[in-house]
Length: 546
Image (cartoon, rainbow, N blue to C red; front, side, top):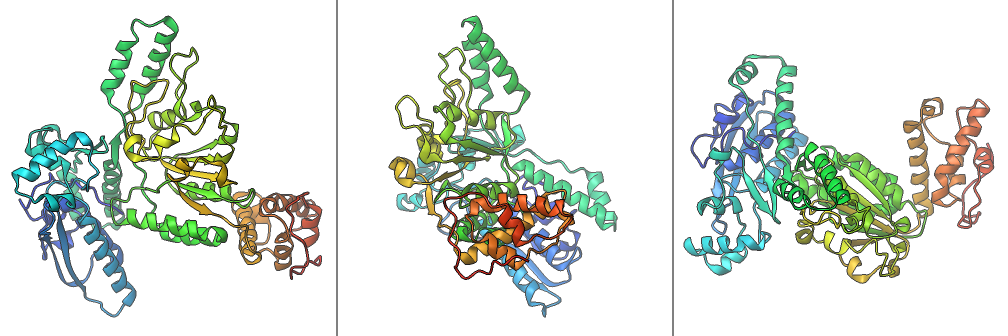
């Protein structure tokens, strides 16, 4: 569970932060908790973790949470956490508390202690460099130190009057790669706080915390495009031909029915268990799963937002690349778009077609971001090595800039170049059979993983996973035995991975027609699919019929 970062107006050491969190954590009252307003989010998340580990009324001998300045960082103050539970014999709880403390400390070092804005190190837009340089000069910060310092653009802009204050707008506008993050003020009423303090009903308290959690999710919102661009687009086409004017008018109408603010999907709380399951289900993708696990761990200690750098899976056809990606995307609370590059005739599938064509229309990326509800969808590019390379048909041309965050933050669809869209949070995943058919500049923008054909031992896990998936997904799944016979597993391991699922589907049908709730080797053999990649028999598996 995560807490909303602006339960009270951000203020630097103006009050004990626990006064703002107290309605939600009354057990904190006797203890010293003195933290600047910008660190409310990691503090609140820590208190939630303590409750989840030690119970709704934690029994603790000592609690002290303060902050410590960082001599090398202008905008960083690290949380210092001292907590001692009454029960000290439970090593698992002790380890969980240690993890929660380290997570909160790491989180606190990623945001400005004054206002709670995310900090950046050399990642601000060029237009902001002048303000940063001026701030460094005015505050006597050594140039060498400034090169390695984390910067709070919001505080710097506010210092020079370059943006409206929180009190005036009741919003915080943060610049990151020329994108705008808007954190709306959360209003928890006095009556709601009183009800929370008075009630002993844990379900009611749970509802209150769920409400608070909802505000956290709404705080992870960014503005993908400028509404002024939409107004200007409409004006620019007032004198255009009837067809062009109608096209733009209809598009603008659709855009205005949506909102420029989109949520950033968060990582699921059970991401570690999910990665474990992914590794078991796809053993030949172990290296990829470790890569994803590491990226989710980075998100865990920051703002929980789902971020995975672009990666490319290379391997023979039918070894499970597409299935792996679909399984991966299914667990995340974000939009998934699959693009079959082998059937794409031009770059318009991603980036639209030029607006001088009569049938010009936006591409998939524009539609997904502008008309969707998430700013970090997953876009899966299947078989990128089969893309047309003719100069007139280049479906991957737009990727060269879209895979670079700075350029992607200024994405312009060819049919509506007047509107700049922040596509820097899109998660790109691609597959290919032969990497040598892909342009090297494009390969360099991906993290590349070579996927091998599963070994005999790995095939055992894949077969069992496919069997369980049928039981879970099919309405008829409950009719069959929960475990597949080891002899049936051995038989299926003789075939290419891409045919296992098809053969299982056919085998279940054969068993059902004979009113059996278990599969036999005979079912598998009768469901055999002609396959040039079929492995030879005689590799040590038993395959007698049962």
